[in-house]
Image (cartoon, helix red, strand yellow):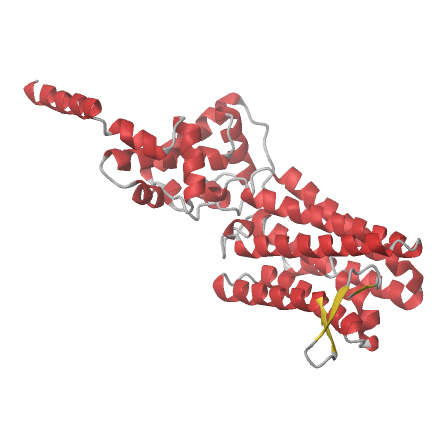
Length: 371
């Protein structure tokens, strides 16, 4: 038998069942969430050493733990803490995104986002009836802020170029999850006010599952956090660019990649590439976009595919060519290869190594020796 109730806009589900002795046992769903999120936080800390991502997951785990203690085990004195601890999560999500993929954020900039939980604490003390409104507004506001930041950032300077569109997709999903959490809080409150508790049960189950899946995806993907230790300078003022300047930038970029093949580094970022060319990140990104019609990731991947083709023609296996060309995942390699060559890599290898092609290569080599 399940028991559902809202606490300051926080969704809670508690499952009760009988054991063999007939005693009633209680297992709150948030307790499961707390265990899973704590595991993800520890794994993130040990495997990647990303403090902000770890702090974000730890905050989510702590919130689930507090909800389980208050609702599942009736620790009433923790109840006033719930709305305050809940509003720590959206600012941490925004800070983690900014620091991981856009530009490193200072401690002073981070502390400014403490206004959200501080304001929630003020409301909880002096106007407790407003907390059910304040908490959803903070979640929705930061969700919109995350989506707006992703829309305006263009190429993410600190994201691995090999990751392609995945970083933006992951964080867009998280932004929408924050908004969905705010909306679900409103609907759950309405459901309880109107006596439609069966609708609240569906909403609670769906929102809890969605958050767990998204957080698992976020912590498990290296695409979500860029390169550890990568620094990004503040964007420099942008001069008005002309077509001639774009051409000059592209010529310098191509000469550099031929001389120093940084595109073969799977951890290459726009920030590192721009720094080596002594250009602002946005200026390099815009030049590539205008000159080729592609973003930085696709441009670099085209260089990687050409290198992989050369290796395959030289007798390398597709897997060896993939890793030696700067790709980390087979799915990304196959997708980019298909986009560049129009066929999958295994078919391209079969064509290049067919008897007719081998004969032409042998004839060409004989002709060269004869001449």
